[in-house]
Image: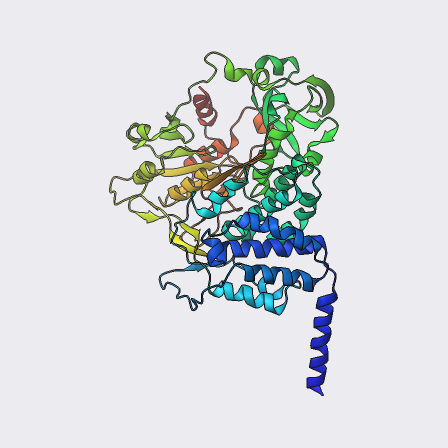
Length: 568
């Protein structure tokens, strides 16, 4: 009786499978996965023996005609057969010295997809077990990235070309993005979300915007997406720069003195609305334009966009002394709105390092270079503390400075790299070491200042300096984007993403989290209006008191004087 019931259920399920209608999004989602899998796994395809892009363009009309799941599955199965026999190589012996990182790895869809017949799933599984074995090394010139250059001349007004580009981009991320597992949204879901936008795009501009939206789903601060031809030359700009604090824009830098003065714009000026939209609404409105690893980094990116307009007439609402005032402003082109950059002698030379009061050293990591390190060490080696200001992007000075700070060599990071012989899997590799056996290492306190401007190289260098053992991180959440940056240039857009994973030696993550401060300090509107650097103030207070938790700390007498010293 049980056998009869099982037989009836099996027949019923096969009948249901063969007759079930399938939507365009379902078909293309499954085709995307099959095409990408074969691109990196099938021995002939991965070896470059076939024009794989053209193969997709040839198969898409057949996919479009498929009405049922059975028809779709048969098309995919016949396609695989047409590629030729896959040599039996299993079992593939895994190297004993490899430690795998599998949080990104998931080929379960091969066996669980509702669109796949058992025969199709079996063929894909066989290819997985007898996959292409690469002899290449992972890097910027890796074949999976080099082949993306093939898409530069595609006409994205053609639907199937748009689908090809989408498939190529989705699969590169699927198999070679190290931080896929920490995205807010599953990458599968992003494919389903973006496919209708790509298919329905009326022109290349709409397609580029759809891919830009897709790129934001990576939640990766290294992602940029510049659409060409750029319209920046036609844009106009606010004559100052700022930061978003408490859902308001607070001006932190004047870019054109005379234009700012004409509208009474100063350091600390508060903006609450632009063209009738609140800063809070603009923050939400632009989320499909910018990829960032965390909210602090997103706000740091989006504020610049808010201060750009495609119309020179802009209404801006300001808040001062508890009162709101809307001004009809005229914004100007880049040269005029940033005219301070172009004034003779405008680029004031910044001190690379300096001795502050109370025998405290200060180093601007954004400007100091390797050739300056010996002089910096000589000038600051006898100080009781050194403040390394890394609220910027440092030069390649980590090795020389860490040798000075560390008493011995220490590993400060490990990497995850794509495992090319099993695409989608990653392997742990030893990262970098800081310092060396040095009895004359620096004995004072090491203070590192960080904030949302600290991205990638800044975060990596901060990890390096933490090995000194007497290091205190002061500031706020960093950009949470660590690893190398792979950039790609295509027809109509330029983009990038992080290529390797970076972790502390104990496995702690840095992506999206950033470097966690020992003392959290965020600038306030009041502090900016008073011309104070509250992060530096807290650092100087810690140097004097040694206290990590002081809500209402008293500034050292030299705090304001030291800040003035830095400005001068």
